[in-house]
Length: 269
Length: 249
Image (cartoon, rainbow over all chains, first blue to last red; front, side):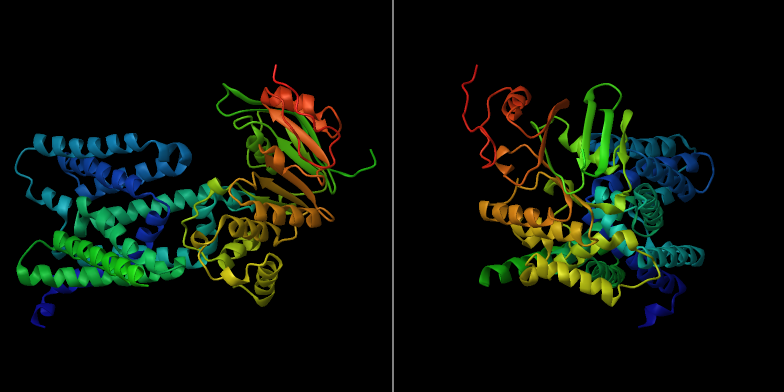
């Protein structure tokens, strides 16, 4: 295939593979822990930081990074039980972040064309340094999850039992939200703020009803994520449609088909 | 008393945000091979007291003193509502999480661990569902899996929080048998708001509603229960001296 000769296509595909690893692991954890709304809040709040840094003449992605890390740390340090009941507050954070971003963009002199790409992302703009960052993140995440998988699962599943058995629950919570916040910012560049949630949740939603064990669910989510990413990428390339939304549309249609087939099989058996 | 003291709660006061007092001035001993039932209405602070005893919550004042025991001597069977039943985990792996206290990142599960897990599966008749997900099993089976997980490290004290709530009467009978056997070697602390959960195995009853109304086991129990619940309650346990349901005032 001749399109593979272009460096930006190569970069996009390498980034897609690396981000599938990120999305499969992180997505499985947040879907299992039912933190989707919270992560949506972090992603959209980071748009505020993005706008602020743009206004200040700094790298916008750095602004998103600062806000995501800050909100991730605050969530990690605060009372989890209270947070989960404060859905409305997360909604406010969500809307406020988006509004701040747009306000800052508006008051910044000149047109801001590339800021819109942060909303929907563009995998074709991914650079080699971006790839190196994602690769480093993935290696750290893989080492962490391999070494501390069991205590992490007990933490996600039954915090009190974990605490009783000497697991440092607070440390796991902070690490969990830090890993998520960094993943969200990395994914903003490729699929955009609006689509981050979809890329994190669709693969585990496809996989979870089919398998019984967490390690299998994570591995399969990575593979499904990869298939959606690559499939969506080529569909977008040949139809000349925006990559991020096509990837998500591919994922959503796959999810619906898998669920439909599953329910048909269940009915017949 | 000649019984060996394992733990005692001394002048314990607890409030969640410094405002509303959940527990006040609780004093409660726990003896070796004790079978202590903590009763009281919902919202009376039973679970809070249990969590203070386990060291999961810190009291505002007073203390829980452990006598030659540590938290590794505790086996804990939490309420069904405290964890996520939809978590994709098989019964086998779920029981294994009972060993998490010994976890080391560079040590893989060895044969001794595997034998321990399999023994628990046998002991609690979970063979048929060992490789089913915990979301697919019945309330009684989940209760046995929780017990298997709590007991895998052979604890000296077993804590159970409302163990009878989501299980059928047959499973209740089983649970009662299991606890009776366990009590030969271990102390048992059980929380319940369900008076029918008290049978003749129970050695001490504590009635808790913000404060401790009664501890021990004799004919005063009914009066205390009346004070705690605000209405007369019949105790169905065989070994209890009175079974007369008094009229509501």
